[in-house]
Length: 592
Image (cartoon, rainbow, N blue to C red; front, side, top):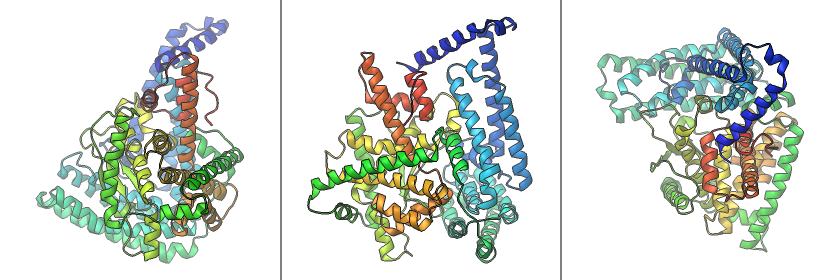
């Protein structure tokens, strides 16, 4: 059943309903078609106006999306600025509520819900989560991303981008003074992480940035602009260095905040950001059942390797076999080529382009995770490079820490990471951005769609035969699935059920077969990214959607095609709950 046919069904159902309420319609001068046309025009006008305002209010977000009107600006995180922005969000929500979603058809019907939840999520962030008051990492990352978003890609002549960098760097000292005014009730761990990240940003501005721009022709810039750049860069370094010192000497001794959201805020955050309306207890039960399921699968696969060894020892053998630091990036490049060819040979998904990402070490300022995909924004027209970032070992780590870190990149693990980040995960999803029909969906893409798709592909590719049934490769995939369910447990248990970081980290080790050092880093992430359950959540939603879609096709006497399912799902660009409605009809059932 095509998307077009499904939306026709929606329209017929709503028109039938409208014709039943004859007295109301009789009082109107407009017929149903005219009312739908009027509502559609009102929504189009509101959506366009809102996005224009949103780009100006969040200039770094705009740059990352490929909108370059505000490349010289920083967001206003002053208390007054936040209050003004929240009031404006409420005004937009009021305007949106005046448009009856049931009168909208086609793309607008879904976009209305996406926009509503996007606004509610950002109001929640500003008024109740309040990272701008409580998390110093917000200001460190703002300073870093304000510059890296301009330096990573040559979307405009270097002279223009340098001018924008100078303008933003001039505002970094004020940004950090605002942070000092705002920050209160800060959790001690967040000060520790912000301090570490702050030093990374200083290093980025001091070493990485000038080195990267030198390769792009920094020395050829007009002398006045070059002088301004060097002066503002040094001022930014000084301000950030002073801010790091302030974090250590002033904020750290009095940091005694609790990072936990609590049940109600956790559930609402998940609802508005991921379009999932489950209680914390339901989420806990779903996760524990999934952990048991994958643990049992691990036991079966481990027995295929050595039935006499405990599962933990089999896993330890696999995770203990990993590339050296010098081999890590070259092997990742090989895996990109291997997985791409498998997709083509097995008709997994249509690849809209022959392009491949640049595989590189993760930049110093962004080294919190193991790997990432840095992609151009959906509206970027010039610099379309994508970067597959892999975090290699830190020379300052102990040998044990280096080994524990590299254990994540064991050979099956690195293959899975490459599937997730590149083929057919994030990079392929990037290639589909141009096919997504509306700007609203391109701007407000939930993490459960982005990370859920990438995580889903890890299992799907092995299910389709990648690795030729090698139990070690399957165990690598299962370990990553359990890693995501361990995140689910950590975020939920700490924020809702009061578990300590130490206990959640120990449970993380048990669930995911992780060494203590990476397990602790993963768990610490859950303190400030509480709903990072969206990886496993999205995977489970997509697997169920695919199963239900295949059953519908069989009932209609049609042949299911995995490639066609993937192509349609990626082109829709909808949260899975809404994709179910688009692909399965009004009575689409639960997403889990």
